[in-house]
Length: 260
Image (cartoon, rainbow, N blue to C red):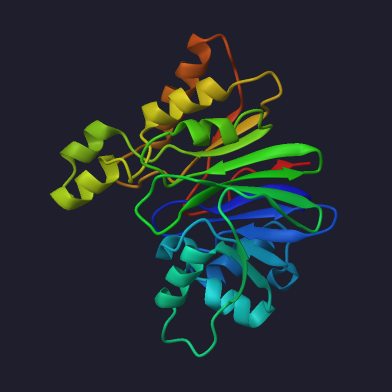
């Protein structure tokens, strides 16, 4: 597959496939190895052909398959030093850790024909990042797991042709849920997750005529509804006279791909 495709997105696992003329990579490797393998097969990609994984942060829903993927495919895992340390702790009982290639947050680097710009996001891990990626003459923005939108986030995501951004929850649904107070405080806090309205404000501020598609990602299964997230983001764009194709990055199935 030539393009990118969300394989799974949400609290049970997160992973995105990206394929270009010269390489095939994953952004995060959450969920089980067998599920990841199956979903790659659904888009015509053998897991053995994956050449690298970029990791945003060390929470389990982003790295569950990482060690097994690295062992079986013998591929490099790109992470910053703090995230690599967190991954090593997560997999402390394994005999072999992933083979890390370290990057510095804020400093761009290249892999094959892809240029990667890791940028800092506010989340409750050691050094979480989003990625702005230049591939095939396009700019792709991947940004989830952040409690609020910083000026840096907004700057790094400017002029993207494609956006993969978080619309995690509807605050009223968080408040009315049966989740414990510590969960509610975390999700709604400044190191938690973006709401539908915060996502809407972000993508509306990033609109430009060459923005071609937006995936709404990391939706809560209990505190959000896909139709609601789509409506709020769409209405925010329409209020400014803009229309952009929107789709949901699903947890339980492969999502709509973007082909180059």
